[in-house]
Image (cartoon, rainbow, N blue to C red):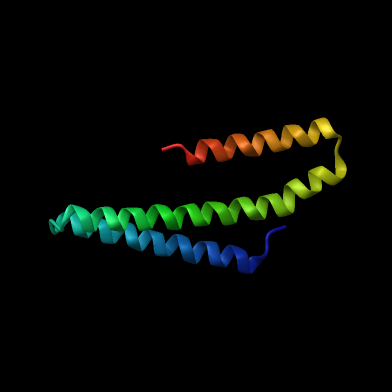
Length: 93
């Protein structure tokens, strides 16, 4: 089960990212330089990857650990394959 404090931290990070995205929109509206805009979008991607990593870490600690304790090797491997598929999909693009 996820910690309430962990969830709050993730929500704070997502709100910060939301603000950064609005800032990039303003930069575009105000015709700021491409380099500055790309710098900000890079920061947004980095922050979003950190949130994804935190969500994945929580999932692995809470859910996958339970699967490993309670299931056969085959079922454990299936669960691990599923999470690897999710990671692969989120990291494309």
